[in-house]
Image 1 (cartoon, one colour):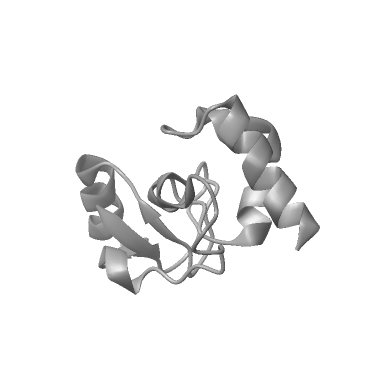
Image 2 (tube, rainbow, N blue to C red; image 1 turned 90 degrees about the vertical axis):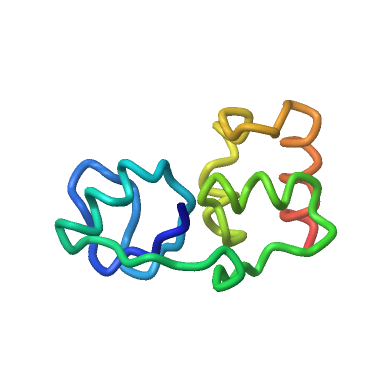
Length: 97
């Protein structure tokens, strides 16, 4: 379920304005506590290049900006759909821009 954070939550690595896809059960709990609001997948704004390998997987995993991806460069293979070759291609493309 796509959500947008209204405020940061201790124990989660997200900040106000971050848009992420998370399990529905977790999202509903955060909504009830006032931390997030529902968002549509097409409302997610990303500065990732449209031709970036694995772009959809990155966005679905909550990495929607270049800086988020580069900050997570050492754990990109933890994102479902991103293997070591794709991770290398992503880092190469983003650092050469």
